[in-house]
Length: 214
Ligand SMILES: [Zn+2]
Ligand SMILES: [Zn+2]
Ligand SMILES: [Zn+2]
Image (cartoon, rainbow, N blue to C red; front, side, top):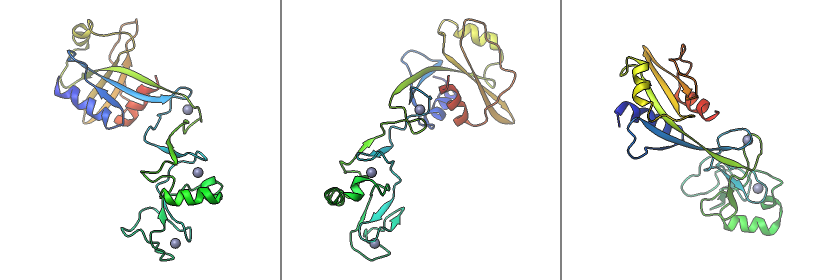
């Protein structure tokens, strides 16, 4: 595979999108992303929520003695406010959460070093879209071809060369070098494609986000 196609693929991968290089295909790569079924918002599989109340993980440590909150712990895990030893846990920040109200659960929470401790059994990976609350997600996949204006000089020649491999719904990313790098993209339809007249994306993040909205 050409280095310039690979570099676009790695730029996609840096946006937390799964990237695959299909066997025997030199001119394209595949992207895959989990999104909300309803609003197409990215589904963050690495996010965790509290098993008891659904609150998200804010990566805070809380002192079980004085309730002080810290974004990171000192290595000894002692509270800087009340000096209590080993009192910092990754608690759920929702004060109404059963893990902060119910006496038994409070004890369990302490034992598990908090809802969001890495070894805690009191959290789940995200169950709902953080944008619209929808409980369903789906994978979106696209094959990405790259038209790089530094390497190609004729779009018709590029299309002729790739025609045997292109399918409806494949994406062509246009990469334009003109002092600064800019991008645009088109989806393969039944009608012939032409080069874009403008290149609206300077950031790869924007480009990726807009492709995944299709
Ligand atoms: Zn909670
Ligand atoms: Zn404290
Ligand atoms: Zn949603």
